[in-house]
Image (tube, rainbow, N blue to C red):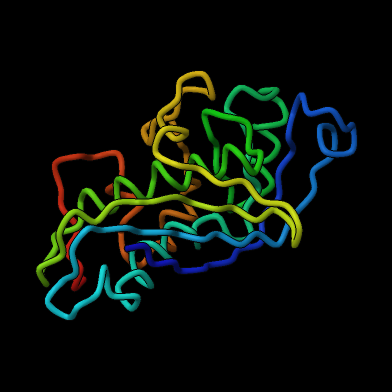
Length: 191
């Protein structure tokens, strides 16, 4: 069975090397929507795949980290990156270009790690990400599945190569982002 939760955020980026100059040479923004689709072969004690209310905490915190940010590719021009860091409190550096396709992969990897580190307390079993859909516009989206998230032909993607600004880390009320690169801690669903 699959369940879906929809979140939204406002963000800006440049997509280097794309075919349109407007997108590859100008900072521009979008009203993004992120669909998180979870699946399981069994239901918990409440007869749910996963409580929608619980998705509002850790998962929303990850999506909210991208709200009102400038997202850049770590391999972009160092002067461009330095200017963004100097003039913006909220920025995120990624090991891949911040296209809708890559953002869907980024969210998959981040949220997959959140799920892996969540302590299940209500009989949840075998919960996994079915897919992540990132809507860049009302008519255009990219959808990522597990095979896409971990496909080196689409670019190597590791949480440890993602950089969140100090302001984003400070505003993270759940502490999720500060813990993500560490695999030795578990998140509690009740936190």
